[in-house]
Amino acid sequence: MFEIAREALGVLHEGGALGVVVVTAVHGSTPRAPGSAMAVAADGRAIGAISGGCIESEAYELALARLSDPAPVTETLGGEGDLLRPGLACGGAVDVVAFRVAPGDASIVHPLEASLDDGEVTMLLPGGHRIVRPRAPRLVIVGAVDFSPALAAAGRALGYRVIVVDPRPVFATAERIPAAHEVHVAWPDAFLCSFEIEESTVICVLTHDDRVDVPALQAALASSAGYVGAMGSRVTHERRLERLREAGVGDDAVARLRSPIGLDLGGSSPAETAIAILAEVIADRHAASGRPLRELGGVIHRRSED
Image (cartoon, rainbow, N blue to C red; front, side, top):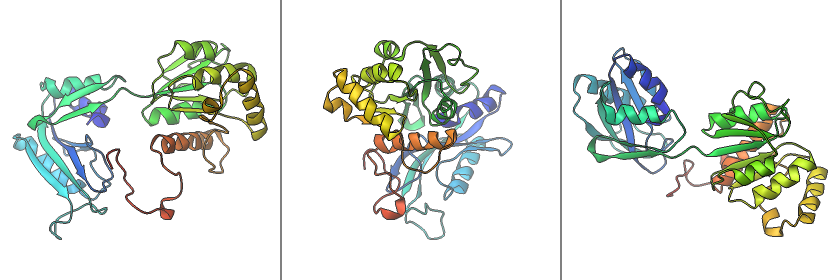
C-alpha cells in the first residue's frame, strides 16, 4: 500500500475516492509481498499492482466495484482453483482485502502521508489487517567520487535513505549527487562513529585513498552494519587489508569486508558498477547465491518465512 502512496494521495487530495485491493497474505510462490496494493480511481485509472500481471484484471474489477459498493470484502486470488478463473502462473495464491478510501478516511490517509518520509509507519486496514512499513534502511556512501551519483540513485530507487560523506567540500555537494538524501562534509570515520548504524545499514567505501578508506573501514567493521564493501583493484584490496591489520582490525572483522566490492557482471560504467554493488548487497541480505535462476531449483519468490 505504501509504494502507491504518492499517486494515491494525489487523487485523494483532489477530492477523489479510490477502490483499493491490498494483499494481506501470500501462499506458495508469488511475485509480490503482503502490503502490495492496487488502487482504482473514478476515471478508471489503475495505480500499482498486486502480482506479476496474472491476476491484475481480477484485482482491478474488485477494486473498481468498491467505488459503487464500499463495503469491504476479502478474497483469495490465484491458486489452482477453477481453470476458467485467472490465477498466478507461479502457482501461488494471495489473500486480499478490498475497500473504498475517501479523502476524509484518516486511518488510511494519514499513514499514507507519513510514509512519504522514511520512518516506520503502521496502517490498520478494514477487517483488522495490519501492515507495517519499517524505517528505510540506510546506505552510507563514503566518498563523493564519479561512481557515487549512480550508486545513490540506484540505492534510492531500492528504498534506501542515501547518505554521502566526504571530507572534501568541493566534491561533497548536493548538486553533484542529487539523488542523495543527505550529503555531509566530514571525515568518514568520525561521521560513522557518531552515526546510528543498524544491521540493515549498508556502507560502501568508494574513495580509493588509504587516508580515508582505512579509518572509515575500521569504524564500519567495528559496527553492526550488515554490509561493508570497498571499491578498488585486487592490488588495492591487498594493500588495504595490510593497513587494516596494522591498525589492529582482527581477522573476524576483516572477513566481513566485501572487497573488491560488487558481483562480477562485467560492466564498468558508473551505472553498471552501481548495479553490481547493489546486486551483491541484495544477495548478501537474503543469503542468496547470486547465481542465475536457471541453475537453481526451488521457489523463485522466496520470503523470509520460507
